[in-house]
Length: 298
Image (cartoon, rainbow, N blue to C red):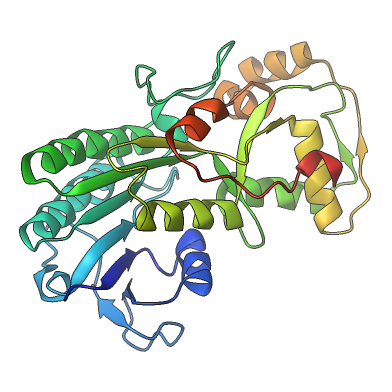
């Protein structure tokens, strides 16, 4: 009887936290066989479109696919295409052939776009991936849906907003380093609306989708269920490291001017523009609810 769950990307931020919370029946992909943080491992040298998964998939009921290349200037378009798109499709095809019942794919809110403007993002929006990373995830989504329809394998696509928590990488780590380096931050006049999701909530959502049929065939936009400004979010980060900071009220127009001057419009936009998701849509699709811990009240 198939009862195992294949967790790719188990050594990454979300993967290792998911395993700590829900370790039962999990097989973790690792590069090093000496990895001793997991009870049951499957070694792959690297994630490519040539991986042979069939030896492990024989016993696997569900796949949680977290592995992939994150957004970074060090990767080329070809890198993203190979790892996030082609390698994902290779795994999904073999999973379907081996009788895997459910495939959970962790995509990105970047598939919707870089900012939400007046209306919150919805899964029904026309996709607008803004970089190679998001484009590779969207390409994978398209082919995964085709595979699911042709084979009957259940598919859940989760598009998380920025995931925060202890040891989180990426933009959260950059903001944390900024808070640690200087007591003066320039966000006192920035009251934008951005959706985020805690590491505990994204793990809880993945586990819900694994064990419920409510999300089968759905695209789930993942967040904590409310929005905060960059001012509130950096204040929250400071509180988690017991750091006292002072927020200087720099006008939004100055940020925009500096972004254009130094050709950093996208980076500035990620700080001061809106990126909110339609939480009502998620609540209407599934009965999962995020933990109610509120950043603003920290």
